[in-house]
Length: 260
Image 1 (tube, rainbow, N blue to C red):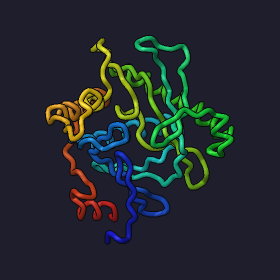
Image 2 (image 1 turned 135 degrees about the vertical axis):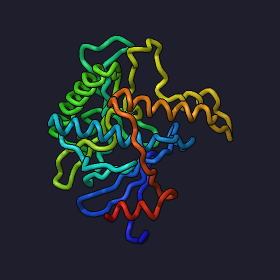
Image 3 (image 1 turned 45 degrees about the vertical axis):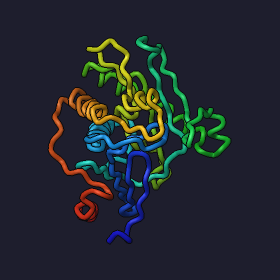
């Protein structure tokens, strides 16, 4: 059974192309800092799946853009295959607590060390055409505006967000990966005027960067709670019971889920 599948992995996902029309993104609990796996955070994979699915459904309902999303189950998201565009776009709408009159859009080349890239360089390197960039520019502005308005109702300020795109099998641009999660966006809570640390594990690593240092369990629990608390505040829903799937957890059941 396993030989029929070719697995791919990134920082957060285990990825499996099931057919020409469907790929499984398994959101793991892996947590990386500075491109290195540091620890596993309970609930993270499930919350990222649920949060992203929640946003994709709203984006599709609003008709903002086409996405790779099909449906989700537990910590697995089923999506349409796509060819990832090698840069992502960051939209920043605030300078500290001051809302900018016009959001700042930055294109960032993916790599071991992410680097800013200009639209002209993108075109010269044949990563995307000028028309593609025009579509992406308009799309990220619409996505950020929608996300900011939606989260403000929930008592949250979306400070910035990053967006990933790909080309589908027809060559059209679609939104892929996470969207408006706490991994891809930074939020302020209106009930807390103190500038929050987006990633408490990352900040701990910065302060305690020693060979062999392990993240304290209490900090991992705190990080886990931050994921679940955000989901509840955003959606107004509690997380239902679920099964966690991965290559080393519930693998036999996972294969059954993927092939059913």
